[in-house]
Amino acid sequence: MPGGVNSPVRAFGGVGGTPFFTQRAKGSRLWDVDGNEYIDYVCSWGPMILGHAHPKVVRAVQEAARDGTSFGTPNSREIRLAQLVCESFPSIQKVRFVNSGTEATMTAIRLARAFTKRDKIVKFEGCYHGHADSLLVKAGSGTATFDVPDSAGVPADFARNTLTLPLNDFSVLDRVSWKEIACAIIEPIPANMGLIPLKSGFLQKLRDLTQKNGVILIFDEVISGFRVARGGAQELYGIQSDLTTLGKIIGGGLPVGAFGGRADIMDMLAPNGPVYQAGTLSGNPVAMAASIATLEELFHAGTYKKLEQSSSALCDEMKKVVPGQHARVGSLFCTFFTDREVIDQAGAKRSETKRYAKFFHAMLERGVYLAPSQFEVGFMSMAHTEADIEQTLQAAREAVKAL
Ligand code: KE4
Image (cartoon, rainbow, N blue to C red; front, side, top):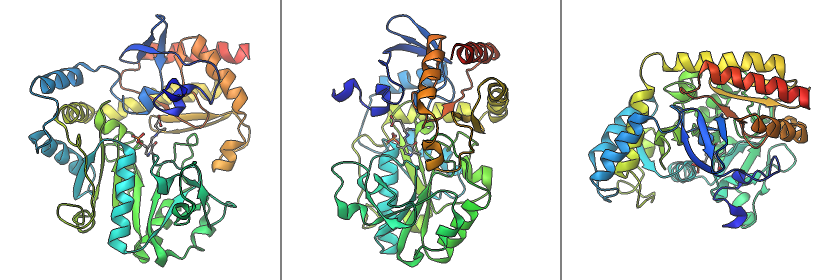
């Protein structure tokens, strides 16, 4: 396997050293094949908001698997999950399930291009939306310029249709020829360059400009969906997108992505309309069972309040212990190892990633697993206890002293 991994960030390239191999996980803990135990703040990059191996999820998966793991036909669990998604996100009138966040964003863009008959799309520097070709591009000079591929193998004329704008820059938004743009896709809570909340008013301005110019607004809520609120960032900020992409939590640890939104756009999708999209394992009963069990457990009253309490308990103390720029939105958090405010990717890149790497390893040695990259975020789960938080803070005090 190239790099010994099936996803690059797992190779510890951002922090150095050799990654541990996980043997099993339960609640807030991971155990590696050498028997080391860690408090886990990566939570499989977001999905494990209930904690690992939640009994209700495991039981749901076991029961579903006994009746067959994939039919390739409609099944009732798909309907139940679709109801849960549409009840959670008022902007989602129709939804389709896929197997990853990448499939979701890739298809949402195809739909927007078909609906508007425009080819150009807008994304924002530092926002990551999976590895579809149109989205693996980066800004030219940091203003609204046509872009260059960010990965080998992406044809230049692919990137030419993607405009990347700097985040939190209001004036650049006014310089875009929006009438040529099919869609703007954004993480409403940017969490792929560390955590950089949008400046107040930025999202509303983007909503207004896209509304006025017939541009489809896509909220990529693969991380924020079901994380910061039942209805994601659109519930938190009271701003609705035309299309929404979901992933991670929605699968409860199994491969599920989703995209949905306005019925007039979604009805362009095959078999109803001319936009093709398909998937052998989309909506398979075992993944659907994990999703339904996860969301039904997550939607119990008091869940988001508890997540908020444990996240603030950890982060309010971490601020006092670890020097740096601390950011938190709900149960998403991150510390930039820099003394300057971070409002965009350039600012994030000024962080001292070598110091972050030393802190990461000092915490790992003390049984705490943080994201193995300064440009990722931490995730709190319902399974993290006060004892976990106290152990984490004690490890941080020792790590800072050691460094
Ligand atoms: P997946 O294809 O990895 O399921 O989802 C892609 C994606 C889409 N949108 C957002 C906002 C995302 O954060 C992601 C995936 N996130 C990465 C890193 N945060 C997952 C970890 C990995 O790539 O291994």
